[in-house]
Length: 321
Image 1 (cartoon, rainbow, N blue to C red):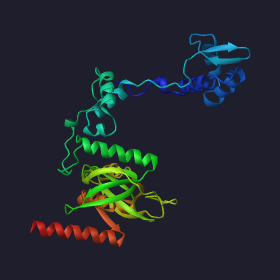
Image 2 (tube, helix red, strand yellow; image 1 turned 90 degrees about the horizontal axis):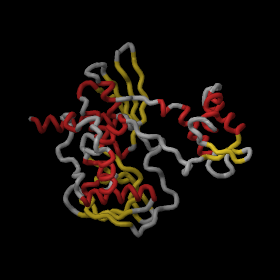
Image 3 (tube, one colour; image 1 turned 90 degrees about the vertical axis):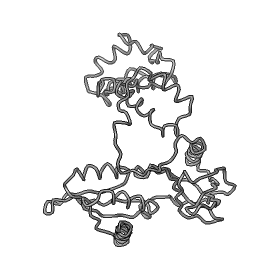
Image 4 (cartoon, rainbow, N blue to C red; image 1 turned 180 degrees about the horizontal axis):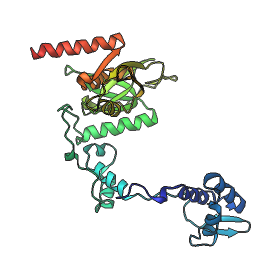
């Protein structure tokens, strides 16, 4: 199975750009082609690319006076998938979460397209030992519908009205403007992050998708000036020390791959120091992820984060006793 293919090299992209420029609008001149090749490929590339494009084995350009027009029916050119990419896609189709993003018609079309492809991996190849046992039910039709409605509302910036089940089992109506969807690998759950709309005011909100019992368009309008759900001013930072054992650094970098972070190595102590930035609404998630590493990670600050760590550890000890 190939990892690399020459069709993904600069020559393919240069030719594709030339054909797009030569499609309609009066075509492209020979001088423009030469300058474009010299700028985006190797200097000698024009010597063999131009003859192939004009009258050679490719014969992709037609002469119309002093201009050259593309012979292709469509302006856009797309790269074919490699066997490795197809194999990776086949593995993704076996993930139950794929139905959140693709409808049945799309899934059926992709399954037929990849019918003779061996998946890159099977989900049975992985043994997940530290995830919650009560993850979201991704095959539930209502859950799928709610996920897609929230995803669409994020793109269109439209407020939603959710009938939400609280932790105590009660129902509350929540008008909110979703801004992003978060997935917790530890909990195997999706959460919607956004702003709760209460009249002319708004405040941050975090909603578990599984607790949304009904969802519809909201009759409330979003404020003209909306604060972003996560920016440099509202973000918090936790500083941790990572021991050089049990592959802790690589595991930590993978666990916090989606977060902004700065990591340095201290030769004196033989440890890595990492500053992780996160949205305040994600603090519980960050805390849980850090705790999952056990003694190979030490939290250095800030004080309020350290106190939450101590509180969780004390609570766990009390339950064990």
